[in-house]
Image (cartoon, rainbow, N blue to C red; front, side):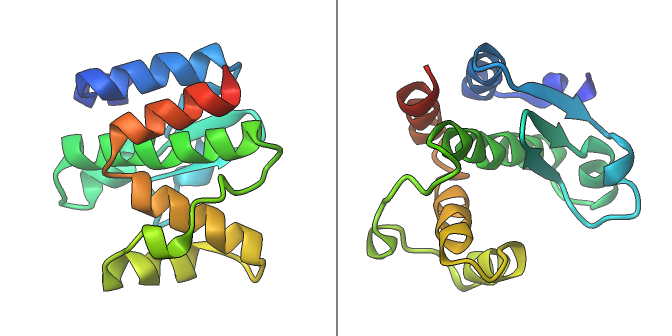
Length: 138
């Protein structure tokens, strides 16, 4: 798995903890093709679209790790009964760009919007991501 080459030490620890929860991590599966996404979480797996990250022209190491952090939060959501972690939105300020990403990523459900907000807020806070995975999944 190519994405493993890009992981920071905390990113590698998060991947280990995700694996311990029973989730698998896949890379560049067919769903990644012809889509503008870097990763996603589905019932029992995380998918990292490394080839899309590489083609984006952005810093590959940065976005591979950010994708692992973001999707790691969604693993914690799944372990929490597919519910938000209930961090107040006012305690999770986001930039205008990330707020647009939340709107683009979430469906009409308030719960989904809250979960996306939590994931976008934590995607640059890997220690918090590792904490919520341990708290809700282990």
